[in-house]
Image (cartoon, rainbow over all chains, first blue to last red; front, side, top):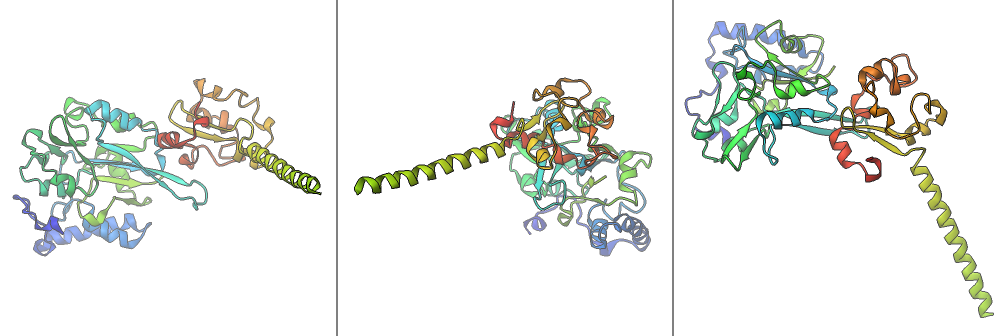
Length: 251
Length: 129
């Protein structure tokens, strides 16, 4: 893969072999716990999620690496594609007509027993191991050290679009006016930094399909959903190894 | 002799044409049952109500009209209680689509009726009013 060859600009590649014994043990303990979450689904997805979906193993010993650790849980079966989230996002973040920061995917299954269609909201997954940040040659895109949001500093962006090619979630677009790549920042610039508690999309959703919150807070709804042993929780494209912070569930 | 042959041919053609027209009519009638397909766009875009699939289950017009729904298409969506809460209170679709009702409950299978903005954009023109 081309990605593996890109120089990492100070970001270390993870190697499970170098985790010290104590941390490794703590990680395994946590791994067993999370495996329980996925036991309702398939054991295969359980192990892959433990290794790939969550915070990097070193950081994931006992706590989430950021405070607040912003995250979104999407109740996939609740989405009705009213697209009020998309409208709210465009309004809040000045998204041009040819780009998007969030959109709704559609999947049809004519042979399904009852409901034959489902809608899947997608947005930047604010990955803990973001391929876009690894790929950026100018550090224009970076992980916010406080809350883990993948941010853009547009004046540093040279428009090479490496990040767009690197993103496993196709969550970036090139703004032809500013000549810089733009993306979802969980409404950090437009709302969170101004004291708002929710992203525009989460606030606009009439079906409570998008739950936004702090994954490091055990009292938050996102924590409770991700750590609920009764429900199966998954992420999109876990094989990309990006460790996303957007989780999906049904019910 | 020739005229006889010709008249027989014309007769056969005429009968064939009549059958085609008749079949055409039957097909057309099948397509539009009652008020046809109705797409609600309020309070959210959008919800499909299919007269055809409801009638196909053997339901008579008076099951819904006009105690639950007025005959005029889309008149329900101008009412303030035409939303999911109203349905859970057994109004409109919720009269039958309830937990103990005769059809699947309103709080299940969301995307069975909610065809979304994409569904609205894909729908044929005559369904959009």
